[in-house]
Length: 213
Image (cartoon, rainbow, N blue to C red; front, side):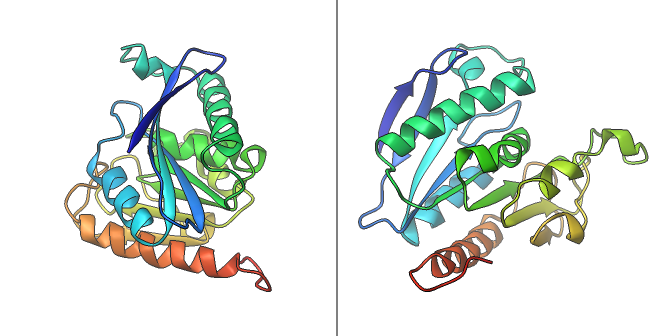
């Protein structure tokens, strides 16, 4: 594993980079608002992605690198994320088919920027459909971010997540894990199984002569 510090419009970001031998794709993941890249769900996804032939980058946003606890505004998060992805594609990840994603707020960033980043798919862990207690307020729903990603989206959420659970119509594939809260920390094997199967499907669809679905 190598650790890169990359410049963005809002300060340096940090990337933990784990390259796979003869990689077939790349997976770049971002963290949630209040945590880093070492959460159980991100760790599980990164581990299994490498096992199926994906190089992996775990991105720490500039506000966390600077030691701030308060999350930066969405526009800053998106701009920093896109700057990091662009540099990774110009360097270590090259022209590999790119899957982006993250947990919670990081998943939102990945959905909002998928088209501009040139991603072929998005992985959303604990996607926060709405703020806690706001399920009955349509104006607070983030479902539009999922629907506007423009590429296949896998969502893995817990059935006890106070941030809500997206509808099946909001994503190409939705997996709801029983007994899981927003942390997605109780069933890492369920996460690895789901991510491995989905990434293998993505890889197959991107082979010459195949059509992505």
